[in-house]
Length: 107
Image (cartoon, rainbow, N blue to C red; front, side):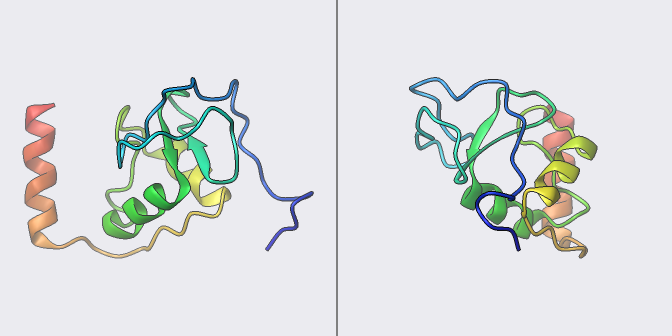
């Protein structure tokens, strides 16, 4: 738990552009960096809502959680964890594993 003054902050280079959309829900993220707006620390241009990336983390688990655009795992997971995103350390279901393999083949 952190107060507003001492909470961790992302080192975003710039605020998102005016029409930037969350890559997860496709809704606009606004044009200012805030507690509810996050950026991928690896590619630095992928923006998303905190609630969206939290839901992605809960669905994916530690084994499959990564940036939805650049697919970075290490930097992304470390930063998201530091920023308070809870990433469960659990196995994914068999159906999710098959879907991930299909996506990797098409990428």
